[in-house]
Amino acid sequence: GAVVSQHPSWVICKSGTSVKIECRSLDFQATTMFWYRQFPKQSLMLMATSNEGSKATYEQGVEKDKFLINHASLTLSTLTVTSAHPEDSSFYICSAGDDGGYGKQYFGPGTRLLVL
Amino acid sequence: RKEVEQDPGPFNVPEGATVAFNCTYSNSASQSFFWYRQDCRKEPKLLMSVYSSGNEDGRFTAQLNRASQYISLLIRDSKLSDSATYLCVVLAYSGAGSYQLTFGKGTKLSVIP
Image (cartoon, rainbow over all chains, first blue to last red):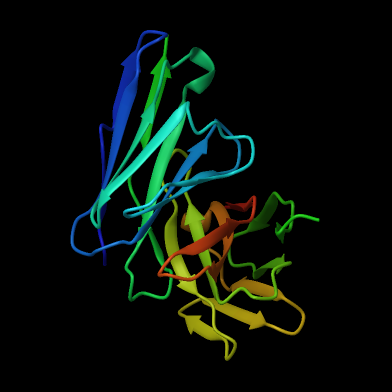
């Protein structure tokens, strides 16, 4: 099956630091990628839809200036958490769908962010 | 009204039981439907796509009823390893190669020895 990677797997940083997370589709092209956040024992929450070559679409309540998304190529999307605070500590996951795969999503392994 | 609704759960069932999950969606323009499973502290993994004709994969059967906007997942002869959270996912194309994904909140299944 299709493989999606995320880097880094773990991040521990100080409050006020900006953190960049990469999401790559390794063996397929993805016009659209998605970013999610999941707090412990809670449901997966879609944060934004990342479209190659255009601006991301953010879900209601997600600050676009706080969570910067760049989808520079058909295999790479990045999420930057700017000026991270402890409440941003979470499990961040991306997904990508093979453009010919009728929307099936393949998820990255996730990035655990801990802001001290 | 939530766009994708699932049984609240949790479901605690004995090994060997048959368990059914239900999901309803509100966007009648939705075009693709999926069930994912998510293990604790892991990313979701695709379990199966759901087709109007119904599809089966071993002990798992998925059904779609477009008229009722309803999706189901049936697990037969449940195993301990089936314990996970099951997510209903609905997709609607929004043109120009992009699409909108909507997730249900998931139903947690615990299979008990």
